[in-house]
Length: 100
Image 1 (tube, helix red, strand yellow):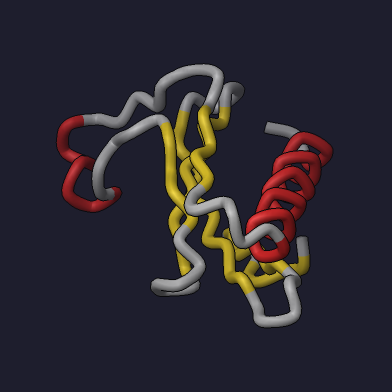
Image 2: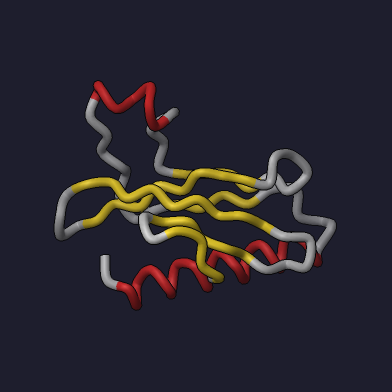
């Protein structure tokens, strides 16, 4: 997945989170991926439920796991999104935290 694709995904999620926080009518948001994630059986416990959608619940823990498949390397990259009170979203990847 290219840096541009990562930035586009981050911006889309940031916009969804902002919409979620502004519109009290929305109770939850599901992110649906184009293809199901394929996770090896031995990675199941480490990665959690291998589902193709993840939920955002801002009222609960502000850290959620997002699983993106790197199509070139055929491996999973795990990004952690941190939602701050002011609406900013930070992404943690192998390089550390950066603003979305």
